[in-house]
Each structure stands twice: as structure tokens, then as C-alpha cells.
Image 1 (cartoon, helix red, strand yellow):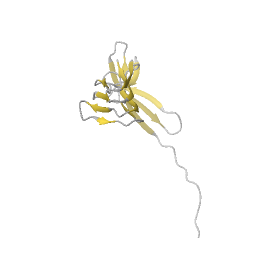
Image 2: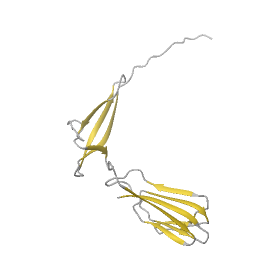
Image 3: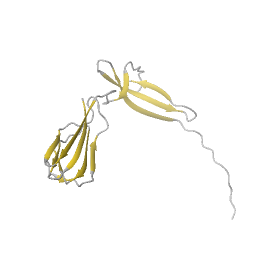
Image 4: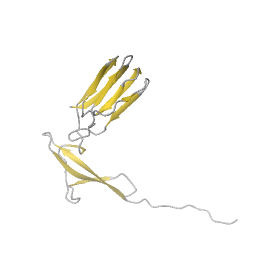
Length: 160
């Protein structure tokens, strides 16, 4: 069998990526702009900012964040333990809800829907990852109902 062997060289290719970010001022106003990341393939990327038209230069003057995200959101956290018969309710708008069942078989109903039993030893979590002004929130309310012999924790977080 005959053939040739050797190496193939590939030239580094240029690349351009874009991201819409927001320039947030101290008074809370926000201006969206376009951040350009370009590489020639032979070094660190170059970064430049423009207005959303993609050509007019823009210079952020506030805090640069992903649009829809708050640079430093304040989060309220709760932990509630239920033993035996009783209900723990988490209203609409939480960022995360977790239930940990130690004993019994409590139920959970989302936004008044059908109650579903949760077995002892289970842990369930519902959450979103982007908060801030106009950020994500859970749209459902949660009702955890304990029965005789139940022992469970409900943890939640909510952006203030």
C-alpha cells in the first residue's frame, strides 16, 4: 500500500461576535448598546462599543450589565419548616423555590392546580437565573400541604 503523509497547516481565521449590553446610570436609567468582539486569530480579541445601529461609536458611562439584569439585586430568602398538618405558601414572583421532604408525603400544587404527592427523601427545586429590573420570576404560586407525619422544609428566594 502506498501513500503520502505530511502535515496540514491552517491559517487562523478572523472572527466577530456581538452582544447587546446595557449601560446603567446611578439614577437607574439604562441605555442598550452593541459590544463587538473581533479577533484576527493571532491574539487577544479587540473590543469596541457602538449604538445599536452597529456603526456609531458609543462610550458607556455607567455600570455595564446584561440587559434585564440588575448589577446588585437584593435577594430576600426564607426557610420554613412544616411538621404534621399545615400549609406553606409561596406567592407568585419568587426567583427560586426548593422543598426537601424528610418524612411523610406532603403535596404541592402550583397556582391552584392539582396537588401532587412528594415522597419522603425527595428534593425539588424551581428557579430562574436572570433577575433585575424586568428580570425573570416564577409565574406560579406554590402550596405545600403537610399531612399527619409530614416533616419538610421549604426554601425560597425573591428579588426585592
